[in-house]
Image 1 (cartoon, rainbow, N blue to C red):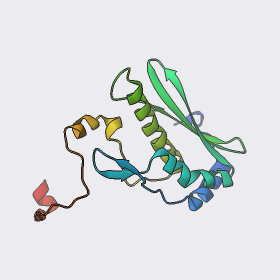
Image 2: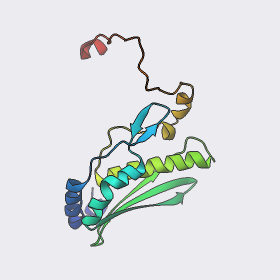
Image 3: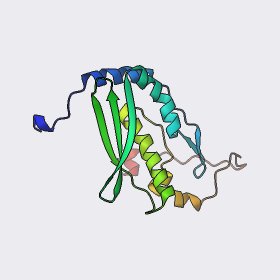
Length: 165
């Protein structure tokens, strides 16, 4: 890689991001995924966990979109008050063409994951079923209930790695 291909150095942004990461709140899973009976951290939860720490360290994260060819692209920018910035572009891939609701779901999913990536936060799991097309599979399953079954299932026997492969 030649020096012209390397991204610009961002020492002020990097130092500020390191300090912001120390101050970021734990990512709370407060939204319900009704299809799979699980919880996940929604976009508002991601914002709640990191925005104040970013702002307190002279950083801002903002997201815009552009059309590239026939594809919507999410642009996530992490900018320091000095003008240093990191920019990430991500194609938004809805599960259904020309469906505004699918596009909105895919855009929200992309916004959440791009913000996590550019700030260095890590989710435990997600509700990516809609964005990945697995929601149709979930529609065929009954929703999970909070009632416990009266029948206890025996644990599966443990197998070693060698037995698996």
